[in-house]
Image 1 (cartoon, helix red, strand yellow):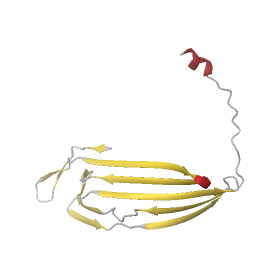
Image 2 (cartoon, one colour):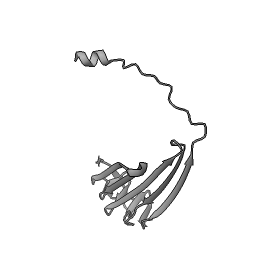
Image 3 (cartoon, helix red, strand yellow):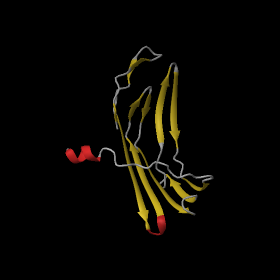
Image 4 (cartoon, one colour):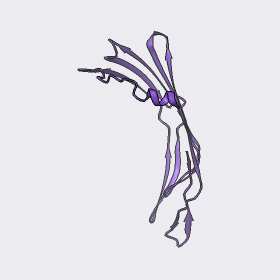
Amino acid sequence: MYLQQWYMVDMPDGTRKNFNHPMGSFSWRNNFRLPWELLLDVDASLDTPGDNENGHVSEVGWALNVSLRKAFFNERLSLQLQGIDLFNSRNAWGTIYGGNRLITIDQESRRYFTLTLRYKFNATKSKYKGTGAGQEQRSRM
């Protein structure tokens, strides 16, 4: 994603501040089916410095998230282990301009892990019984 805005704000000291520095946001999401019916998700994201609304992000922030999921009893029960920001790299450092206030943010990254157990009560299967409508038109084209 590319974000570019043309936004100017009057500051309390009488000057005008431009918030037109572009930002880039990149994401990479993958899902793998492993042996023993395991599902592996590997997600990465990266945000570049720049301006967003009335704030300025000063440093690159990136993260790598990984999860492993296993289903049991015909998908009724599932267990998922998830690691968020494995390299502890998603720092938020920037400045927010608001009226006569200036807020500086220096938030450290937070690596954490979750273990989720899900059970589907009264799970129903789809009742859709498609007939291949439109096949004739696709063949014609």
